[in-house]
Image 1: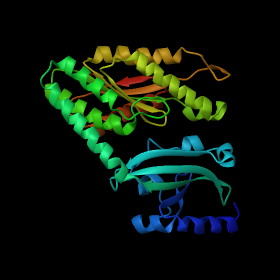
Image 2: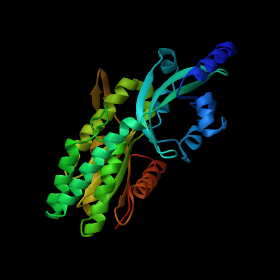
Image 3: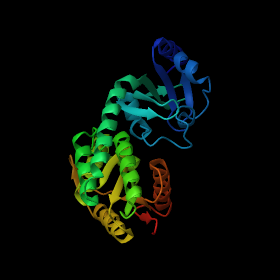
Image 4: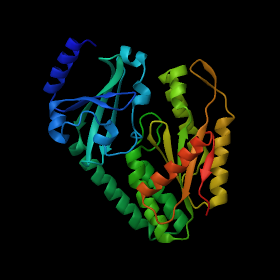
Length: 321
């Protein structure tokens, strides 16, 4: 993109009636924000996007840079659309993002952020009402039957991840928080929270293409569904990260289930859409559910998962009882 084209690009963005910004996909630095976004958050153009926009200290788990950071994506005009909740202003946004060339031979990502909070409000109220009803009904039945019933009702009204068919991040957190509260209240139900991440997923995308990468994600989702029980809660948290709440399992059972999954994944050779002998591995971090809230469990399991990656990947790191 020439400097003249860049100037025209910025003028067009300033005419857009919703938030727009451009990010350097290598450094995560914000290269440009339109006038509407500057009026909302100020003119901190040089900050990192995950810090300035979302208040995080590392890239967002739903970040799409892994899907868009390539010359092919920039030249083909590939666009990704997803919906995310921003904890900073507590608003829902539909993000439409695309790779482009930026002055200085940078491959950048521009994003349109459209506020859809009003559309989500009625959906969230309905989900909350159903969750409350399920929690009330659980108190009248036996513990294991109650957990199973809650899961089955949640399944009927769930919001699914469009690619894998698993529960999406928002629903996983909402219903998972209720499950965790119930587990802690009943005290004698052992449970574990696990984070799972596909190792070197960007390399899979780079080597085989994003279409094959999507097939790997769907394969992993099917493996999760086949490896765990209907009473467990499984969801895709964003990108190649997944979460599981394992109900009524002690340390020994949690190791057996999670390590069994890791070994199954490691030993498979996949033939996907003409690509043969594809192999991938996963790293897993798991913590025992004690008196923690969802955000604490996410952070602790995430820390153990990254410990597994630092120790060579393709590994389970689990907190002992």
